[in-house]
Image (cartoon, rainbow, N blue to C red; front, side, top):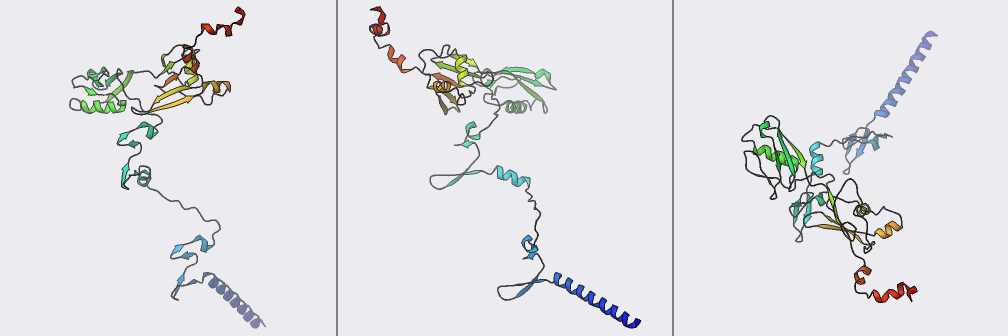
Length: 298
């Protein structure tokens, strides 16, 4: 009896082991991919053409794969030259902010441009390890500055950083790797010009953020001959380009909405033209029209 029971347990264990082996074999059985020519090729689960595919593996939430971009490629994409197509179909590479070979701040859109030296600007030059060369120079009317022991150096239109490098190269023959500090002591203050039909036309310093309405108020306001609906703002972008903005101050102030008020920039010209009535008033016979303005005199 015991022998029969032992054989039964062994047979049952063999059946269970066989079932487990068949189940594992079905899960790990390689899939067969049939080619166009009828040939077969074995592929592993979740692979296609030797590459892992989340669509075949049935992965519900595939992990995001990071794409590494080298710094060289990033800089190359930003500095990639633009291509300008000519009339004849030929292409020519142009750098950003360059038009006809000339640099233009209006095209570069530079938000915070560096200050560039102008005539009559005063610059203090300090040598850290050679104080005997310290000097204060003024940009002459021809754009040059006079340096100690050297010939004149052209400085007009240069930023302070550019001037420091130019002075360092100029003194390279006399000093070994000089350390130079440049301080702008005096310069042309930011200004705007108010002209036309204002009470006190002239040149005013531009202190802080100032709008056209505020500029007119600083100039004493409009007089009786001013054309309120056509205040013109002239803004020089470059030596050859001038922008013009027209502001209807009468409508803006009547609507009590200063959202259209223009913010001034250094060098702007605010011009208020003369109205039409004041232009023809000199030709009207004013004494003969007094009867219409003061009928009580008769």
